[in-house]
Amino acid sequence: MATWFRKDGRFWGVVVDAMATPDEDIIAIIGSRIELTKRGSRYTGRCPFHKDTIPSLFVNPKTQYFLCFGCRAEGGASEFLRLWKANHESGNA
Image 1 (tube, rainbow, N blue to C red):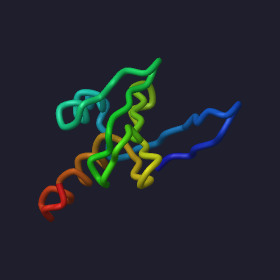
Image 2: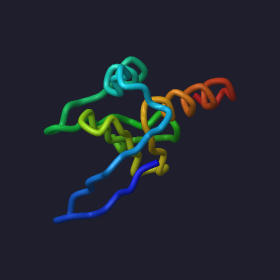
Image 3: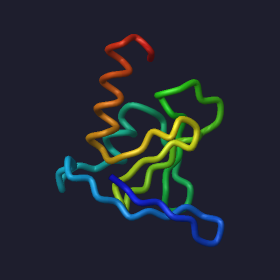
Image 4: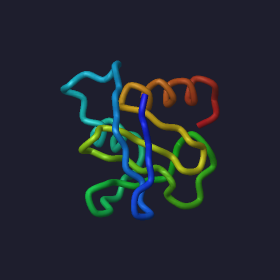
């Protein structure tokens, strides 16, 4: 669950993910499945949940949260893994 708001033309977020455990590192989990590039304090990559031609997936290590501006997938590490599993089991990968 997240609350996103816009400030000065940039997206910021306050995150509460009840399923995430404190020892989960979202960068390690997502980075082991897709290529991530560091952009400032965040990471970007091509979203694995839709046909992505430019990086639209943003991962924030500070809040341990990801957001895709293409398909609107969002959540913590546990949500990414749930979507990854569902996407790969259905043969959409």
